[in-house]
Image 1 (tube, rainbow, N blue to C red):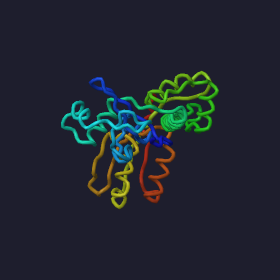
Image 2 (image 1 turned 120 degrees about the vertical axis):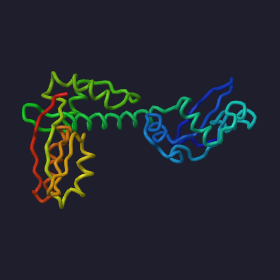
Image 3 (image 1 turned 30 degrees about the horizontal axis):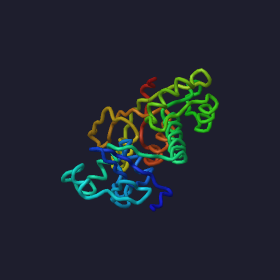
Image 4 (image 1 turned 90 degrees about the horizontal axis):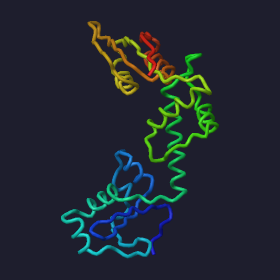
Length: 235
């Protein structure tokens, strides 16, 4: 018998035959959600079974009929993508917990308390979600669920989905170290290299990250960068 502890089964049927593979549940799930995951993190072995729990392997003839010309790795990927991932209740609950963390993080980053123009603490967001009894779907993308939950939170707390547009002027000595950081922090709208070697940029970032962004720019340029808030954009 195969030891299934901590593992999941992917089940796939073709030409009246059933095929099963053993996978690591979290990497397999992330792959099915569209993330790039190393195939060796998903599969420890590429053995295909007719009945995995009983240790009965699929025959070479059956595999050839159903997956003509494919390598064992290609067969494994096809079964994962087109089959059904079997998750235990504990595995689903663990994924659900991680999904809730993602949702709370999205709301914390992208929303503010409009009365005070400050980010909303994560623990307050999580408590509000629990108090409302919001049903979180472990299969649904975190961003889509977060956007729906934001509307549900509006009657019970001050909250607004918002981004902020900033103009920056970075002195020549600091453009190299800061350029990548600014690009990764939001959406670059405009950039211009000035005659003195300085870099002028306009970028749009989630309002919830504004304080940390400004702190990073200030500390990395020793206070020599110029930053101006151009516009706050409700979304």
